[in-house]
Image 1 (cartoon, rainbow, N blue to C red):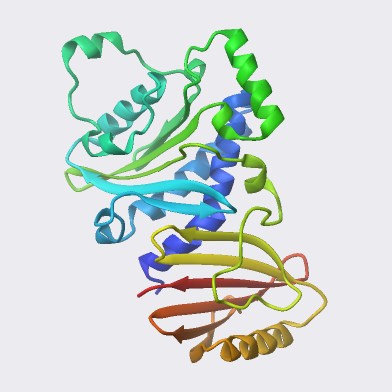
Image 2: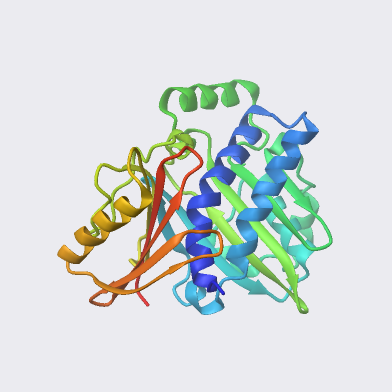
Length: 310
């Protein structure tokens, strides 16, 4: 069975860039009139938070919010448990988004706590006018927004849209804020994702890893095209994915293994999964590396590298 930490590493590259991208596009450009579009957005955003909220409590919480660099762009992730009701946590976050407070890291632990009566009276339920997306069912729910867009005058909103169109930087519009929450026992398990500062969406939508980098001291497969890289700024987790054309999986794996051994890696084990993927594990010093080789839908060979401290 895969560990929760392995699921976390897989989550970030597979879901984060898609979820943030589609949410921001829908929030900014109002692409929610189509029911099918909204259903896909809700599904992507619920899929973003659930695996994060089920990761080991100590892994993130002991270190507080963690910053990951995805394709060269920085995004923060935090998880936690609240003694409050799930709907109270989601409602509180939605109101923060609508009032431009967003998901301030310092206030995440207090989500769902009662607000002073005067402040309660001054806040209203968020709507699409506030650039807030939200959905929930019996199991879980989410809230996503772009902080700073709420109730902007038309000319101010147009100016921000022009700046975003010119630069491709989400910061020209506002920071992305996201919270997933589900009931756990008598409380609520939550996961938050947010941006602060420059964040270029085009890099997340690109099929190439334009702003990323190869893993430090880890040889990439020969003649490979890098499609995504993810690294935590605390140095614990690093990820990179590649596509290799015009070579067999066996040849790609053999050549890559030789390069890793020359770089000082010791092979620990290899296995083939039920889905037919080849998985090889290595160690060098205190770090562990997993290399996954599979046939991509494009006919190329996909190589996925996970590099982490224990």
